[in-house]
Length: 282
Image 1 (cartoon, one colour):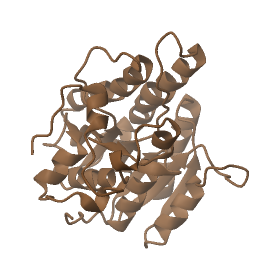
Image 2 (image 1 turned 180 degrees about the horizontal axis):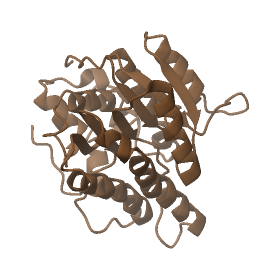
Image 3 (image 1 turned 60 degrees about the vertical axis):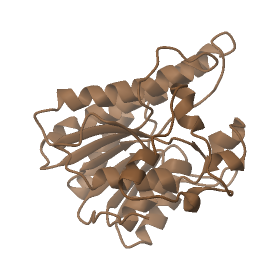
Image 4 (image 1 turned 30 degrees about the horizontal axis):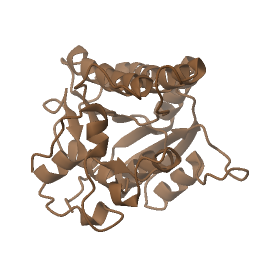
């Protein structure tokens, strides 16, 4: 596996850290020495069949020797976002890594998707990414180098039958992030999206039946790819839509078996969800 960067002295604000990819990213960055602001909606899982809270993630990060701070946050709420950003900056002084990971998902035809579910995905995914990024921009402009990274796919299609509302919301996250690369071009703020080529073993993947364990990789493949981005110079590495596999292959990974849940390499179904013609280049 690639060597992680030294993130000592950095602080990352990550949305959606209770479980899955967001938690994996938080733990990976903590392993690399970054302080962590763990945010999300879940603060109590005692009456839930889903284990994980923002506080538990923060505690696991602290166990790795870094400082961590948990903030309950609904990314749809502008006032909550502004308050969370202010609290994070007050707590750590500087935030130099912002990761938009929180997302809502429901795969359905336009005809079958209730309007309130469309609103939820649009609000969490596109609005949430916009609000969090916007709130941090004045602060990030003041840093010598900083990042806005978003867990969203490349914009490669103008249609996605069977999942159009979800696709619209996820592609919107990338659209906002990559647009910021130009809007912040005069500053050392690297704005990039990242997306798994394969399906990832998460609660959503299992709930929606997106394949079987033969088709999934662990969230660590995504967190390791994020670390690869953070090795780079944000002034030069900006405006990119990365796939995790491609970042890791470039870093020298030839064998992905450590990330796979079963023997055999999963097909790139996550990439093909939004780019049906996607083929591996290695």
